Length: 369
Ligand code: G6P
Image 1 (cartoon, protein in one colour):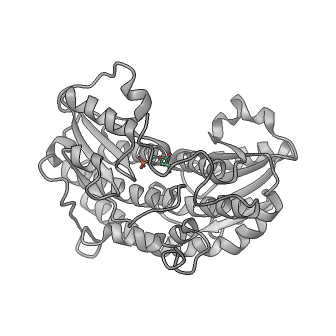
Image 2 (image 1 turned 90 degrees about the vertical axis):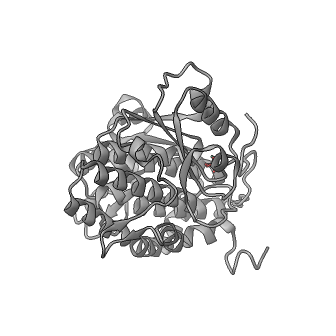
Image 3 (image 1 turned 180 degrees about the vertical axis):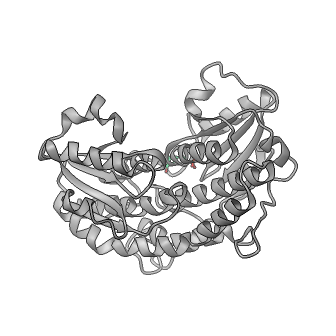
């Protein structure tokens, strides 16, 4: 096991730090930014069906569901196709409206999650076309899907998903980009610009990982907190959910992720000087609004840990702690902004003496309902 961890204390640590490579692996042989080429060999026969779909339903559980939420924004923006993101377990136990030819995208790291598998069978029985976005080659979900794209992220051992999440985002982004270009909802120059930006992500993730030491110091200050709130808007809203999930899973600290604007409809009541609030406040179209949300938290004496874009000069004057990540297109920011949140949960869990790789009550692959 020590050999498999290759010098890292935990698999989760290894997998967090592997992300520049796993994301690059995921694009290898598929994306060529210089030539402006993007090829997804696993989605051929149903590529047209995807482009012409009237709607897309995404089904997944856990972290994979969060990747689906980011994909919803990406597909709607790039392809102009309405998207619904469903928990597999909810989807299968109601009477979902699925029409012949609807596209279902099933996202799963393990490819074995029982609820996702059952939701796929249900969708197929109603005539939907299922595209699998799966990490484990030859897994049940990859076999029952009509077509799909593998993550190529390599095995993920830590129960809390990290590199699979960023690989899922990368693959989903490539699928959306390809469909949008073929469909004509984005022009060639925008297509090429997105390819270029995507190809720069591994280096940006590498840079985001350099926040590690600062995050370790911050973790030490908050390791005994009993609650955390995570806020984000737009593309960073699912990142807030994912950050909160990571903390819950491995450190057993209660954490909630919220769309920052919804804070006033509930969580704001919880804010006092004991409440650390992690705000993902990178420069994007909702930046000014997020800045106002930070002010609202500060006005109630909350402690703000802000994830900001490199060079931000406004937020450091307001937040208690700021962590800088490199700039990228806002739709790609989750790939970068999630990194400090993975590190935060990791360090807090280690400091609390928790079993990081195998948290209590959780399983890597949930093959029961
Ligand atoms: C479990 C794991 C999570 C994972 C979820 C979905 O709860 O602990 O890390 O996100 O299952 O798993 P899947 O393999 O379908 O992505």
